[in-house]
Length: 519
Ligand SMILES: [Zn+2]
Image 1: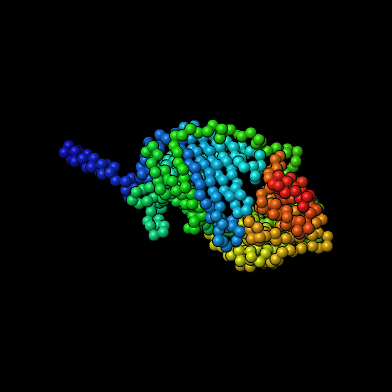
Image 2: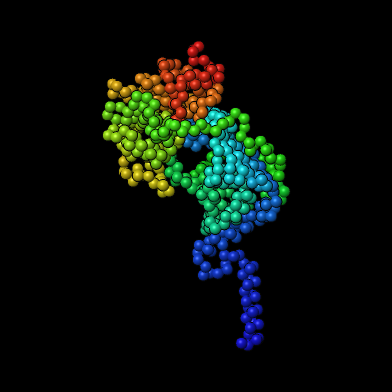
């Protein structure tokens, strides 16, 4: 080989390798697989995003980051009126990611119209931790231990509050990175990439094309009430903390509609309270009922059952048909109830279903009953909601009702509706308006003396400790008295399957300053 040609070739190779190093990696080879090119382009965008927040070295140098948030939620599908205007409710919380000790703490407190705050906390060290109800007004004093993959969600969800750590996480689990071409929002063009977190959430990370700052992230999902939805979390007003940029404002959008506005108070490398990682006094692990065999459809009275897999969904058996109280979640969740009822009580069709109110956790499953041919009993102000629910657009998770061409069958009542065949009786009452919903249906079984309600009285999981009644619970007790419902012996909460004795309800009221016996 001619030596001068070898030198030319070597120089040529040198020039080529220099120039490809100067360029971004995605241009390294035009014959690369499109998937690999997409990955490489995403990696370049991510690297620029990490640099814009201070760089990996400075981010990794932080021992801990704490985010305290405070603001308002716009209660989409959780307001007093089914179509709004949406009530606004306080939303506060605290996230600590302690990188030095490989642990995290997340306290999230969200209020709902008329029923106050639900404050849930997660404390995880490595792959072990616990979850509890900090206000003891929902699960009561029960603490849930979490381990292994059960900790994926709290870790992933908490990291979503801290952009520099979220980007580091994307870089460390980088094989799922992909570039998204042509991302535009509100008329602005952004650089966008996607990646999958440990809890299997696929995030689309959106960066400002000029500054490379993380604008926010977006997810898509199926929702029982709205069908296809997007959640967009936008970060703003970044400030410098030890050389790392962190946002001091956060806005959440649901289908491009504002859903939450928060101020974020950031601190880095501060003292972490060790007590947050210890189970507080007064909390206990749930009791194991090893001797009690579990059946999904559990009998609680003559012809009365609960679907325990779905909380306190009540099933009432008549001579020739079945009535179901409440249809939560989405088509598939309520179809689960329908299938379980068919198995437990064959040869009788579900003729009626009633939903307490239009919030998704009570009404989103109505489509399964529309599909099965049951008649939905509801109050006049909720009819439009169910007509819309029957027509939602689903491409992510289409349910069988979507393609069935069936129309929902609705019957309305204003104050009271009685279903009876002479032997079995269910009385439905509209106990609204109240601070939770303008119309709210409860069920009373006069023979069995069972009272069923949703979101007016929360029964703690354990019953070891009774909460003081909320104002809405006291108002409910007064309403019951006015309706002449004084004799009930058991009370059910739509959200779980522990049936409480009436005495527990009365004790709650007494703690809240209202004595039923004295009224
Ligand atoms: Zn509700």
